[in-house]
Image (tube, rainbow, N blue to C red; front, side):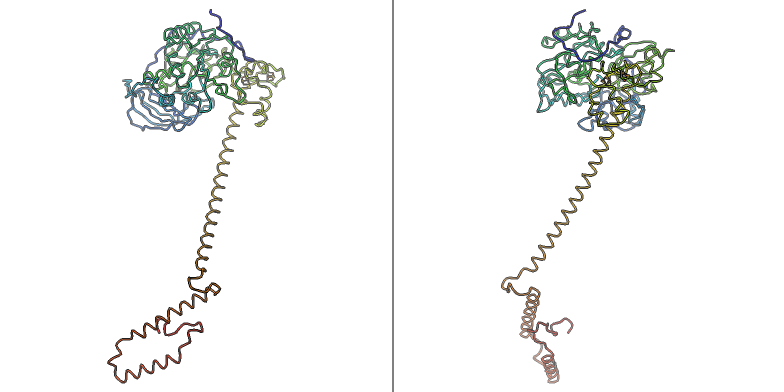
Length: 561
Ligand code: SF4
Ligand code: SF4
């Protein structure tokens, strides 16, 4: 076996665990057939679920987009084969709590007919931004388990630049061997995917970390770098120590850099991607194929055949188990992922998703959760093995006490849930369960805090708006009044405005009267009797008329008189 190349660093803690990988690496990756039905969850990634684009009865082609990313932190979903959409309904999914989530159900037609794929492009001629969009369109997320949308991790932003791009081929968790087999069988595709990602990130150098127990994969990858003429890509063998595959641990081993508490790899100018993600990027860019399948390890004493298979996303786990010969009498627990970081599910009707790397059908001897646990004896063993230098025992106490402030002060969110602390705990305390529970509770609290702060902001905004409207109304009234009270041109500025208005009205009446006097008509051919009556009326009017200067209106000018 080759020795590790160049200088390597160490991280604190960690465990030497039996790897149990031999049994699933004896045969090549199988090509699993098309299942009777596909159950494709809308959320297979960190972030927002995708938005459905199809309806029941729609015919879809292989690779056709069926749900579009609904925001920045989201990923599109594509049909894994051709067929007919049956429905979009809630189905149980792979989740520790056994929850259900919306899934698109497709009945395959067996033709496995590809739809129209986007034209292939020379990635070297694309800008990093266009390349990221292409990778986004293909629905690629981190295939190492986290499921973070890949295009985001390929975008360092304006304020950062990436010095080192690391490809994670450590695959340190026992039983899991899908990355190992992928590197053995598709080494050139993985390396080409890496080079494409380097272009997107404009990274200066590339390192690939592979644990010592994967000699064949290491050789294949070295060979591929030579065949492709990319001698500047360093393939490095690293010591076996769980969890070397953790992002921060791998960075430490390969570069000696420490990602700060609450920090990200980008803070030390490093980006880390999984080898399977690199292969998916290659498929998307060089073949225009979206992410519709992945390699899954099927292993454990509870299943007859053990190995790896390329599986269509949405394939029910039950069909996968059947493909490997079905359950043995020893089958006791169905675990998604490995024995350290995986979680138990209660049904095999849940589908394979983009992040399903392993199905472990465990016998009681392999992983049997302790029936009971005992009080903490403060031995400190948990602290010695923590690869993140946390104080697991303190975290346990604060999680029990639901002291969320203290948990955050003790860097709970740096915990990678590797399970080392629980593995060594003599009191068999399920420590990771306490941490997961506490993290969920804190997220929930943060969510409701930000919701109520949003509600408060909305309320305050409304109050401000109403107050502003009130002020504007008052200002309008003030201006109107001022305009009314403003003396007209030619009037006395000291005069009472009301009196001035009455005076002006009287002036207008006088003018009118004068005009009427001039315009008297039909008075030429009156009889003496008529003339007498007019004379009487005029005399009467003269005696009843009130002088205008008394400030009273002329009664004769009133309507109806
Ligand atoms: S290993 Fe277990 S018993 Fe020992 S200090 Fe940690 S939590 Fe307590
Ligand atoms: S599960 Fe968390 S606290 Fe425990 S050893 Fe791993 S990182 Fe440390």
